[in-house]
Figure 1: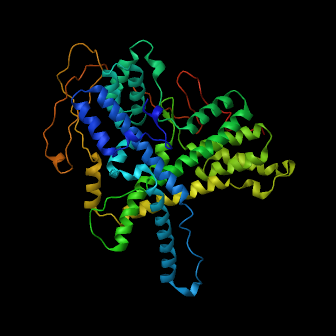
Figure 2: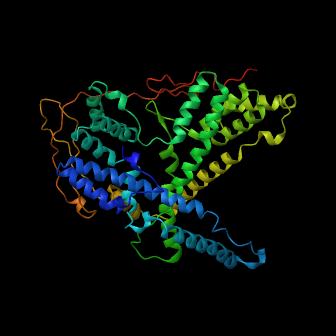
Figure 3: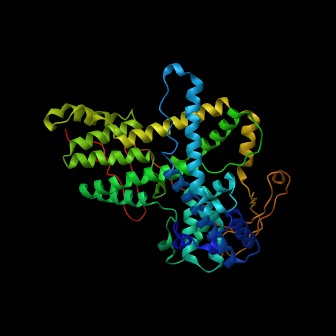
Length: 454
């Protein structure tokens, strides 16, 4: 796969090029049905995208303390001095970031627009890669690419039918895997398997590794949101700063959902809270009441109305003398507090900005331009061949943002007739958590994750 040749530390020099150039060329070759060349450049664009995100995260991690503000002035100093103190920190961080980026190859190329980056975030390249792989006679990669796209776009009918076709091929299902799986997802799955097998120690070990790995991925995600921005208008200083920050916030508030695992076809709702939920019960079963209580308190940060967990906290409080617990043992863990505060405050600021700082025209324009730097038009044709001997083909037509509203519909060729495929819906479970992993029987037992022995 494309990631097999990826290395942040030793990226191949012959592949260094602007991300948009590599992606556009790969799509051009796709349109002309030059499948090997299309695959090559689409894979290169995936590696370039990963390199850019990793480079952004690297610099922001290394400069995270460079912008610490100067010591607070006395209250009598006034707002002007406080503002200067804050802006001096911004300038020092900017200096650090500039120095860092000057030493990294990803920033020596022309930088892509945010719209193009969002296409990669939505896994759009995979819908082209899956068909290009198929036409290049590489079924394993085609199946994996189709599955990777479907995880983020489960309602895409064309890809559903493609997967139905792939699954009709013998042994194809063994190639179904998510090419964008993060380490914390595998750790989480392992922890749940151990939990379901009453292997509490292993479950705790893996879940305690999954938590910091997720927080690192989250920090990298919000850091990547602070990348370059194209300036398209002239505004006053504060309005210009606000516009940029709103755009950054719009990206940051999506990081939580973008990083949430999809297991067995279902999104793991309240993922961070769920990890603490598992931990509190596993620690309880290991008679580690101090950690059990802090994990229960951490869970309640994210779901304060959960009646069963509130009862668990009452249970821990009732037996605190028996177990030697102190009041500080009933406080949420520090990393949970930090994550909760950051995500909550970001969303509050973003909602305020949307309500008070974006006018209707601006919002409408932002919605219209969501097609990205390279706008695609896909129209399904009613002219269908009789034999379903290949998956659906995505037709590409590129237009500028201005042109996209004036182009005629483009009929799509090679549109195949397939039966509709039922999509399973997530059952309602009366407040109990359930996760199933296809073919691996990974699931919560109905009461075990909540009820404590009283």
